[in-house]
Image: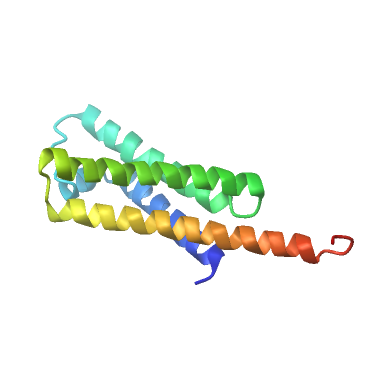
Length: 137
């Protein structure tokens, strides 16, 4: 699959998850089996699950064309990997074996893999352009 497309997919999925959490925190809470009983809880869902994920998606989508942007996108991939690690730790320490946990691990792992594979392809393409440019040997 094309590197740019892989990065676009991972960024768009993260952005979409964030937007849904910002606009429909009650839906997200129900889906994640959380118990938001206050307005403050909805605010936390909008911020932590909405704003943060939407911002990470935008960083990934906006960072494909420059080396600095790809470096920032790699940082987002590390954060996504941290989310996977936290879920795996919960499996071990909390005996949390809910199907949603496995789904979250699968989706977030797929985002990380797609992002890093896509960024790797984009880096190779950028390096090839530099090597083939006139005046470089």
